[in-house]
Image 1 (cartoon, helix red, strand yellow):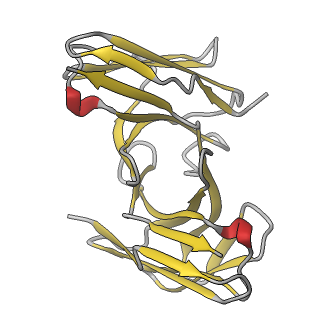
Image 2 (spheres, chains in turn green, blue):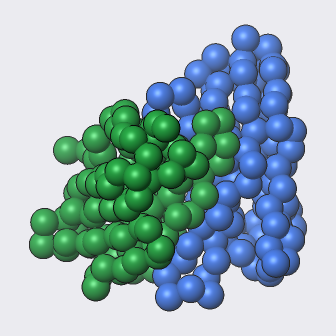
Length: 112
Length: 114
């Protein structure tokens, strides 16, 4: 089983749509969870950390289900500028050790 | 604020040639530092990490090596490049002030080995 698994997409959605990305992870000891965004040929940039209680930042909502080892990202009211690849990221050894495992990413394309 | 620099931005090297990529961080002290590689169509792979000067941990056996000669300097090297070393090399620093470490990436070096 892959350590961090994501649907590769692409997700092609119209502006204003709501889109949801899912991610599963295999290491039950993982403690840190993140979503990063990567534009074409650029470095990944932190979008948001994911907390146990779920968290929201503007149009973006992240959820964590530890029992199912499942993470989600919801984007409401999609903008053209949201087009990018979204990476699900989980720490490898648990605790606060920063060795992160990255999913291969889900590509989002928002169309006018 | 913290800034992370990498150079060069792009590099084309022949097979068998040496490699040296440099990463420096500004605005923080004693950061954890990381080298990742992203090959075409694949996820980021952790290559090395360092928790302090002279301390290097390798995640993947390969013909690459890393060094940390100064607190905010991290270098990735190879004595002889292979075709399979082509990829996007990313340096990251870890912000330990957050409840859990958060990593921030430099702009990356795109390496093509021919």
